[in-house]
Image (cartoon, rainbow, N blue to C red; front, top):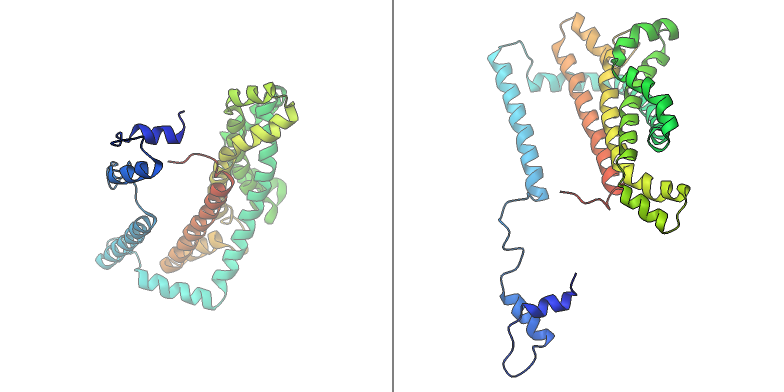
Length: 293
């Protein structure tokens, strides 16, 4: 690549009576059309515009919901009715208790699954012997939905908290271990060979090259695992749970209490979205070296 000064000078017309100075170069470059202005406008939304579109999209969804409810097509309660019911559940402490119980189950299973999946994924990706031993089991259980194991888990572990956390753990673990393994095997071999040429041993290559390069895959796997955990906890709480958002939805279904069902659905969606945004912020911070589009 040519030095920056030489590039600027090539764009400057020769000044009359002498060699162009740096001041002439700056004046000339300010008159010339900038590179930024040559780009087509509107290719990338600004942050404020993006947020404005987000808000408009949500508002349009709420208006559409109110319109369907007012038409009485499917007996759907309107936003105001759901909001009033949510206030009642919040006032008597039911919503806080159910939310806390579901969050505790999801975070327990998710953290356990992620903490175990990351080293196992590295083991599978870095050592072929480890891959040969572990991969058949991972692929076998990956084809089985965690909820299909609920009857077996309940028979063997009872109906307490353990089976519910276990199925969430399994859902998070399988998503994260596959992503971690894929991240390790996708590391550019050129980087590894360059590190070897510079004298790095296997431990240094693993710590300084493989772990950072595979971190985006790991974080994506954790996000997928968190979503799978939320999807699993609702079904797990349908079976003999004393509290939780899923249990409350099942209870409300028996009395055709549609506002309560929708309140819990909204809470699950909002909490899942907030946790996903949190993981996305962590990912952006840890992988800020990565080129983004």
